[in-house]
Image 1 (tube, rainbow, N blue to C red):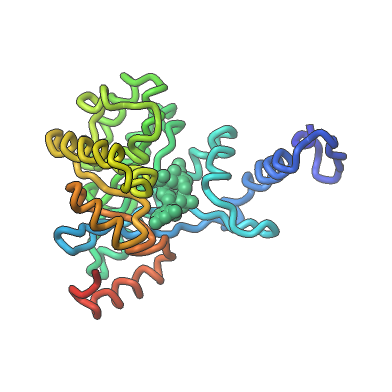
Image 2: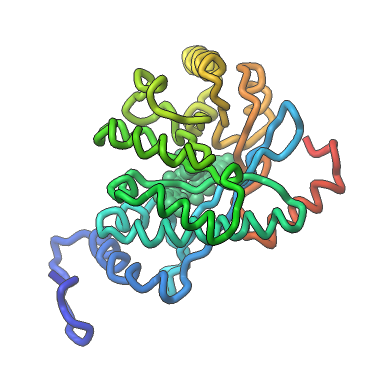
Length: 283
Ligand code: C2E
Ligand code: MG
Ligand code: MG
Ligand code: MG
């Protein structure tokens, strides 16, 4: 395997090996160094409470600026880090930096919760709660300003253990939301056992609002969430039509390019200043 060859050796790629596989090997090799070489950065995407016409929070999304390949999407590199175990130090880095940014904003008067995506792999750590607690202490951040986004795929794992760990994280005061809801292995039957505060409706729903059956499903999800006292956040909101339809279906919090793309921290500050100028005419 090319991976196991030393630095000064070369390897002739097998013709049968697809381009994709070659790229994956290259990414796998380079991502080991990416943390040490400051190739990662975080962008923040706003979530907007439409009904109350106010910010609801920001989501931290990871970016990798590869020295020769350019920006590699997390959809491509996160699965690699999950395979290699690098997801653990990387998540720690994201948590530390996002919490620090949240604290800095708080000191500037921008008091907004921040959410960080948490891979199911992190639940293999016995000390996950401790890790989160240590970071909150180090940054001196109010736990209520941190939210962790998990996905439905966790129902495939040792669900009792995951529930136990979520309870312990939540007892710190940290919020939990379920990301990409409605796409994975349905966890509806577990919603009364999994300790969460919010559901994020996958963008697939937002993009299919014109079909009556999809509308019926969203309507049912929103009603169910209301009864379970969960917030619902719609993902992938790109235009006014999406907003109108989602509002009509009872969805009040939205995230998507219409409100703001994922931005570097400095851009976020400009975005907020600009939005303030426009005041309530923003929508
Ligand atoms: P996600 O958590 O569901 O994040 C939403 C994705 O949708 C983001 O893609 C965001 O840029 C994109 N998006 C937001 N608004 C719109 C819109 O209006 N239209 C469309 N078409 N897309 C929109 P991104 O940043 O490429 O991230 C992809 C996925 O990678 C994330 O999905 C998340 O699962 C994962 N990811 C990102 N950062 C991290 C991280 O730090 N840790 C872990 N474990 N996963 C991460
Ligand atoms: Mg997310
Ligand atoms: Mg999502
Ligand atoms: Mg998604």
